Length: 268
Ligand SMILES: NC(=O)c1ccc[n+]([C@@H]2O[C@H](COP(=O)([O-])OP(=O)(O)OC[C@H]3O[C@@H](n4cnc5c(N)ncnc54)[C@H](OP(=O)(O)O)[C@@H]3O)[C@@H](O)[C@H]2O)c1
Image 1 (tube, rainbow, N blue to C red):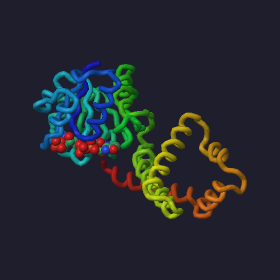
Image 2: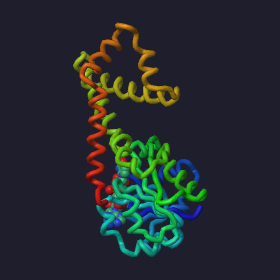
Image 3: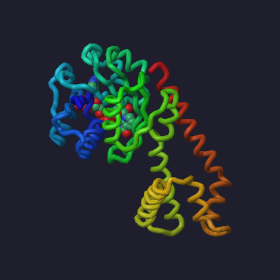
Image 4: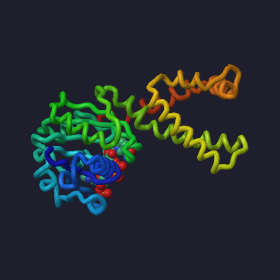
């Protein structure tokens, strides 16, 4: 596989590099990075041993793939040499909300352009990343994309029209889960537990339940029903959730996030 270059060397680039090196599919010698004005690239190099390029031409000189890993607002002011320097290369963007059309304008001669939406658990290899591409990927480019995004966790191909909904479910989703964990902790305190015990119970319950659900590969409703005896304790709790329309609240939450994603990515 030709070298993979990272333009932007912050948290997400670091997470991908960490995942790639941990999987041992690539070595540090296969990876090169460049950051912005601060010293994130130097920090990434010091931590992982990957190469650091002096400038954009050097970054792309030996790379077959460029990962765009800077903040979305920097695309408009990206170095105009990007257009020529990405000629014939695969461009993979993790810039939230930046559409294939905008990426294509910045890199018009790329051999293909891939837009992705990773999420924060990718930082420990437990993420899920949705992606779409300008045109169907060749077998070789599919391998590159699977390897790159696989470094963050699971990978799902979607049409570009799904990306605002993806952003609302898996992009923003971890924050909903963190909020649920905090709510479960606080409720445990209200029920008489110490904060430390309530927090441990809340986190481990979320973690264990999610792992069980993923392992069993059955509908969550089936597992829910298996732990709900008629007129028992779980039944009493679930009845309160239904009375306050928990599902309606989650639906409103996701639709609000999707609508905001549509607003933010309009003309983007
Ligand atoms: N974090 C997430 O969970 C998450 C999830 C989905 C998508 N994303 C996307 O991932 C991207 C990166 O996020 P992040 O959290 O890794 O950000 P970050 O840690 O702030 O890193 C941004 C990087 O971009 C560099 N940079 C700044 N200005 C630049 C420019 N003009 N040209 C090229 N590089 C420049 C920065 O360099 P210096 O600091 O050295 O100046 C830094 O290396 C964003 O587009 C975001 O939308 C993130």
